[in-house]
Image (cartoon, rainbow, N blue to C red; front, side, top):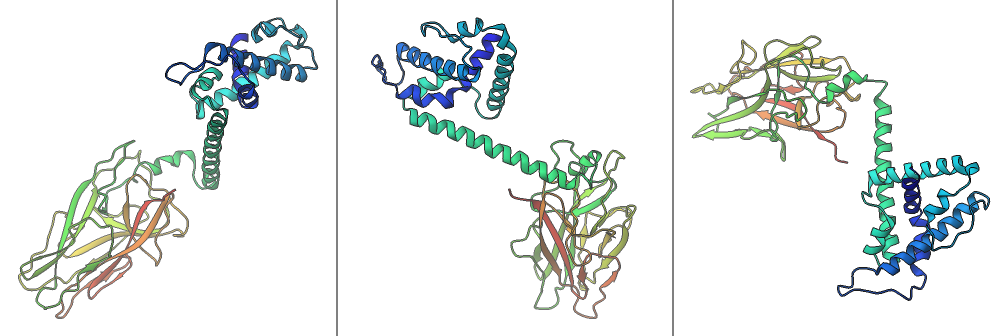
Length: 380
C-alpha cells in the first residue's frame, strides 16, 4: 500500500512541479535517431528533481520532520523510514491524493503518469497545454452532471422513481399515433410491438381545383397527397399499439388526443370527425379498421383535458412522434420540443356533409383541417 500510495503522490504532483523540472538545464540530454524519445539519464534526472521538490513540499507540510536524504536514494526509502508519529497523517494525505487521481483517471486520463507524459512531450509548454485541456474537459463534464442533477431535482417532486418507465415505454392500452417520417416508435431498452397501418381518403375530385395540403417541411410519413387520373387522395399513416400489459405505465394527465383503436382508455373521452368524401366513384380505403374504430370515412379520437398543457408530461423520447392538439395548445413533453403542423383534407364540395362529435382534436370541418403536434428530442 505504501508503494502504491507514494507512486500516486509522485504522479499527482506533476502539475505543480513539471515546469520547474523541465526547464532545469540537463547537460546529459541525448536524442536518438528518430528524435522522439528522451535518454534514460535525462528521465532519471527529471525524476530526481521531482523527488526532491516533492520531499521539500512534504517537509514543509509536516513541519520539517521528514529527514534530509541523499538524492541518489529514492523517495520510497524516505517514506519507508518516516517516523511512526506522522504515519497516520501521511496515510490520510496519500489516500486523499489517491482518491483524487483515481477520479481523474476515471474521467479523462486513463494512463496518467510522469514518465510516459515526459517521454511523449519534450516541450514543457505543450505538456502544460495538454494538462490544461484535460482539466477543462473535467470541468465541462462536471458541469453537465451538475445541470442534469438540477433538472432531476426540478422533477423529483412530480414523479417518483417508479415513473421512470414512462420515459422508456409507451403507456398501456391499445391506441394509434400518427406516423412520422422517422417511422414508428422504437425502444432499444424494452421493445414494444407496433403495427403500421394507413387510412386513405378520397377527396374532392369533380372540381377542377383540389385544396389538399399539409405543413410545408412537415414531418408526417409519406406519401400523403396523391392522384390517380382525375381522382385525388390524402393518406394518413399510423402506428398502432394493439397489445397492452399492466407493467406499462398509465397515460399522464394533460391536454391532448390520440387515435382510438378498440375503445378509449380510462380518463379519455371519445370523439370523431366524419368526412364527406368524393361522391363520384368513391374509392377510399384503409388497413386501419378494428370494430368501428376507424371506418372508411371517419377519424375517431380519444381525448383528455385534465391537466395544464404547459406542465411537461413524461413520454418515451427515443423516436419522434405526433399527438393531436386539444384545447388550443400543444401538450408539453419532458425532454422534447414540439412544433405545430396541420393536415387539410378537401372534402366534397356539393352539399358537404362533414360532421364532428366532441371532444375531438383541434380542427374544423367543411374541408377538414386538423392541428397536429410533432415532438422530437430537444437539442442540447
